[in-house]
Amino acid sequence: MGSFSIWHWLIVLLVVVLIFGTKKLKNMGSDLGGAVKGFKDGMRDGSAADAGPANPNSQVTANKTANDANTVDVEAKTKS
Image 1 (cartoon, rainbow, N blue to C red):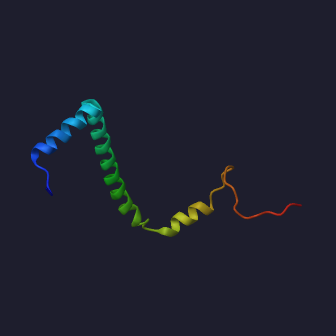
Image 2 (image 1 turned 60 degrees about the vertical axis):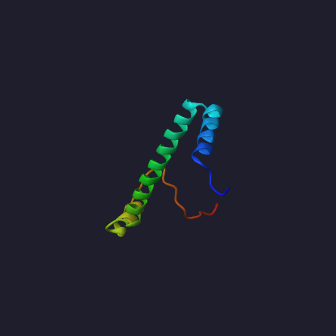
Image 3 (image 1 turned 90 degrees about the vertical axis):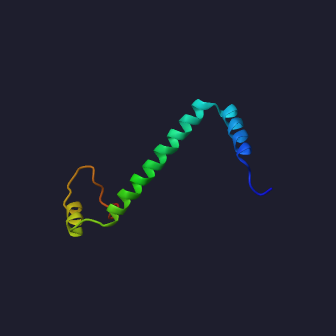
């Protein structure tokens, strides 16, 4: 009574195919495969990003010297 036989699984598969249809099941399978691939790529990129830059000071000084018109100064200014 604890485990199902092959016939039980075939009936469940047949019911699922009848309810969802083969096209929708194919699309769900490809979407799931794409999600797993994206997750693996993200995990690989995340471990490379955790290593950090070779020279962390170069990144900080590059941000300090930016004189872009769109850059907003984070220091609060008083109203005159």
